[in-house]
Structure formats: C-alpha cells, structure tokens
Image 1: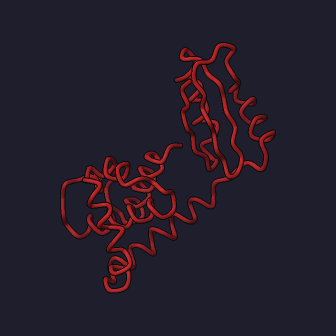
Image 2 (image 1 turned 30 degrees about the vertical axis):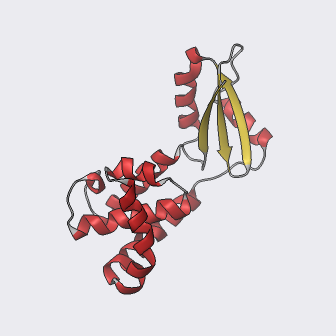
Image 3 (image 1 turned 45 degrees about the vertical axis):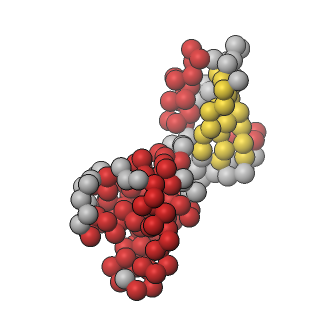
Length: 171
C-alpha cells in the first residue's frame, strides 16, 4: 500500500468517525466542520505515516503549503482550540486502533510462503520489481510487464489484512 493510498484510507476513516460523507475532506468548502478534520488527518498522516506534503495536498485537493501550515499550527491548535483537540484525539485513537488491528510478518520466509499461497511468484522474464515491506521484513517480487498489473492486484488482495507498503522499482 503506497502512502497516498494510506492517506486516502485515513481520510475515509476520518469522515466515517465524524459522520461526514465520504470524500468531503476534498471539497472546496472552508466550513469549520470540514476544515478541522482536514487539518487533523493531514497532521496524523505527516507524523504517523510520513506521507509527503505534496501527496496529502493531492488527495485533499489543496496546495502543499497549506499542509505545512497545518503542521506548524498543530501544537497551538491542540493547546488552545477545544474542537481541534477533541477531533484530533478521536481520529488519532481510531487510527491507532485500526493500525494495530493489522498484522505484520515476522520473517522473510513467512512472507514468501504467504505470497506463494496466492500464486505470487517471480516471473521468468522480469523487467520490474515490486518491493513489499511489512514490519521489518522486506521481500522483492520480480515481474514482467505482461504480469505486472495482475500480480500487483493479487498482492493487494493477499495483503489486505496486513500492514504493508509497496514500492515499484524499474530496471
């Protein structure tokens, strides 16, 4: 799961916890009931998942400079703005619980065996590599361009209940 997708999931979690409709954080509205959750989700993504300012801005359809502002104002807002503090605590706790529910792999052999169960194996002719990181375990799957899309979808399906990140490496 790439960082942009992680942030999208955090936005969906934020809207569901606060009773907002899905996708509302990307709306152009500056109403406080949307602006505060938008800032909270951005700060959590920056601190917990190290999502870049540009990626956050792309998902919520804002300029990256606003994300810098959210990060700069977090401490002050948390200390002096009760609505921000309550929203932050609620979203952070929900996100922490959600993150803890997902498993990681203990060693490379366990991850490789799990991928083989889902028929995710190296291609004979490979032009690209998908690096999968789960916890401290890193595995690489070598794929051909022909198999790439199907295998990437299989990886997402197989690892949907695990904490993981993917990185695509081209040769």
